[in-house]
Image (cartoon, rainbow, N blue to C red; front, side, top):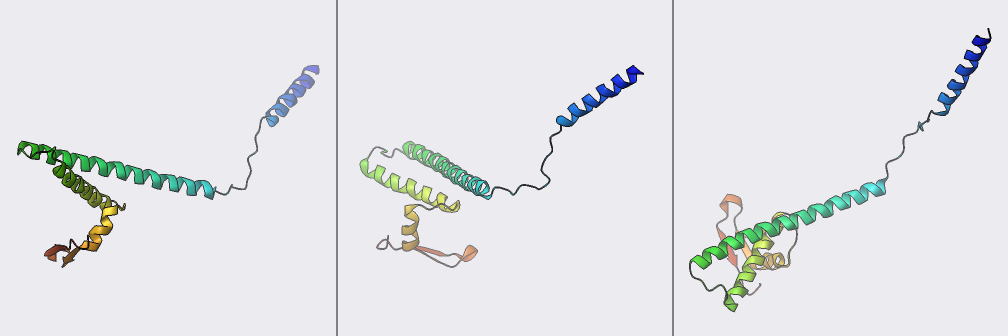
Length: 135
């Protein structure tokens, strides 16, 4: 009979230890941290912006490199200072055009909007005019 009492006492001790190991979680759900979500959304937007800038820079460099190689093959003087000025404006114009497509502003876009006019829209676009005095 002493065995039964000892077993009962050991059983009760292990049950108490098991109960001590239980972690009770709160029943009320926590509210989401809106500040963290806002910061994460801002971070995602900044990453998207930087990605788009790098993407446009890579495309722009690829296109201008191809153009320069072709001009070199045609024996244009690529080291002429006047050529380099024109080339820089062309490459910035290309970059500006590509940035506009990914919704990023560039200083040349304002000048283009001010000086270039079009007639018609979509497939019916038939005239694009540049007013250099407004540029």
